[in-house]
Length: 255
Ligand SMILES: NC(=O)c1ccc[n+]([C@@H]2O[C@H](COP(=O)([O-])OP(=O)(O)OC[C@H]3O[C@@H](n4cnc5c(N)ncnc54)[C@H](OP(=O)(O)O)[C@@H]3O)[C@@H](O)[C@H]2O)c1
Image 1 (tube, helix red, strand yellow):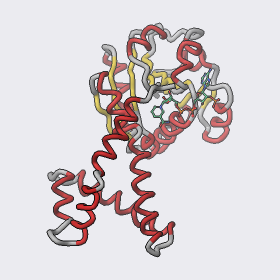
Image 2 (image 1 turned 45 degrees about the vertical axis):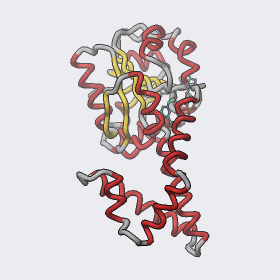
Image 3 (image 1 turned 30 degrees about the vertical axis):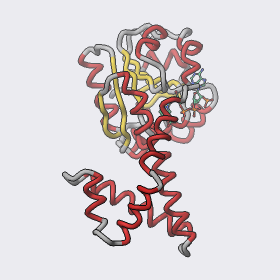
Image 4 (image 1 turned 90 degrees about the vertical axis):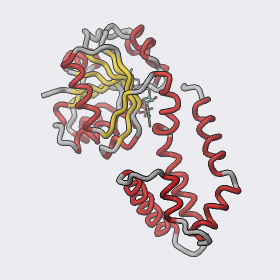
């Protein structure tokens, strides 16, 4: 069976590993390496903890999931033996990866945290892969959600509207729930109601041939209370607030 090797086992690696396990990938086919948490993860989930070079030797695909500023330090001591390597290191370009790693088979990926429920959205750009590696990469990301091959210069905007956006959706849910709580619902109940509403609304949009703007207009009948709310959002320049936050996200430099 295909073996996936994770160098780094922090939040993003764990999200991917959870997603793989939910798709019935066996723990023994998931290899992990990190200074502290890999051994603990092995105890918890039954995945296999290995020293980094041993992990590379045994993996069909290696996933780099440590912090971006550790790239040179970690990879300079390793021989990737022309394995296909997928990096999720935010802000690190294909060119920088190819300078740091001695393989021609490189994928730059940008997943979001929803990979842990197999509902991730992942951007990909890659070097020319041999067909067996191409299949391994496609299968890996399809297990975790949807994948989109985009130009590398679009990674920054993708990072804002897909990578960071789960946090912004949580923020909107939190704001709606707090408003519900201010008006008498318990905060827990308000959060549950709003969460279900967001899930249902996203599914309605995903299954519709209408745009998000058209669906807003369908919910808001003229002169009705939803229209009053939408008018108020517009008076407060809600779209500008969102655009401003997206620009701040794009402007931020990765550590
Ligand atoms: N979190 C997200 O939503 C997200 C989204 C897109 C991309 N990313 C990218 O994913 C990467 C990881 O982010 P994260 O949030 O998971 O960070 P994190 O939770 O801080 O995890 C960093 C991991 O790197 C490991 N590490 C440190 N030194 C190492 C070494 N010498 N060899 C192997 N592993 C080593 C750490 O190991 P120990 O635990 O053993 O100390 C830890 O597991 C980053 O490059 C980030 O840009 C994250």
